[in-house]
Amino acid sequence: AQSVSQHNHHVILSEAASLELGCNYSYGGTVNLFWYVQYPGQHLQLLLKYFSGDPLVKGIKGFEAEFIKSKFSFNLRKPSVQWSDTAEYFCAALNTGGFKTIFGAGTRLFVKA
Amino acid sequence: EAGVTQFPSHSVIEKGQTVTLRCDPISGHDNLYWYRRVMGKEIKFLLHFVKESKQDESGMPNNRFLAERTGGTYSTLKVQPAELEDSGVYFCASSQVTGSKGETQYFGPGTRLLVL
Image 1 (cartoon, chains in turn red, purple):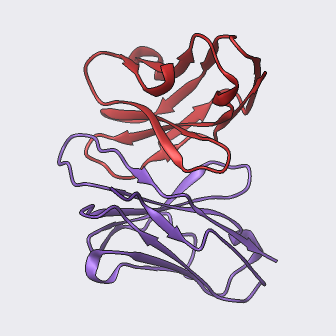
Image 2 (image 1 turned 60 degrees about the horizontal axis):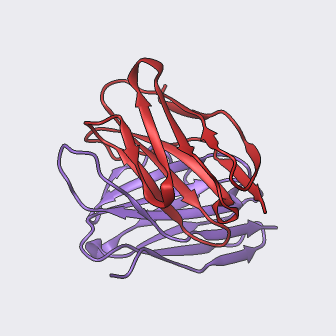
């Protein structure tokens, strides 16, 4: 069955710490991968996406993610987090040409000032 | 450009009542999706419209849920009669038709539904 799993439900970091949020997917065929973020009281927003090409994808606000096909992973990274990065982060996957996005359970990130 | 909008932002109803949620997609987006997040769990796909046609409704929980998109513009999702387990956040998303390439779905703010 198609699925997306996120390794951590909650992460607490101090400002300036480095961040890595794990995401693994289970999908047949070619897959498109996304990270979405939901800041407190706001919409889900697209942080970055991978469709093809360079497996290292750069997104907004200094985030990046690396697609490692052999590991079925798409981990999100940021070298130095800020208090304003406190949010919930969702990894998601979509079959190329498909429409049904599968989401992970989400990771709540708390950044201490 | 206006984003995806949803109404109401939240709704509190009693078990057995009916609630109708509305979603207005981004203008020109033929694809419209409904998703739901039950407390503490993952966001789950409910259904997908292409214009006014239901393309995939495999995620609809049961026949108490009815989605429509008359005219291919806005969509409504009606829950009748509501049950306690229907509580959660209902998200709508829209996207353009991009053919074989992957697409980006743009999400609305969600409607928080609480059934008492």
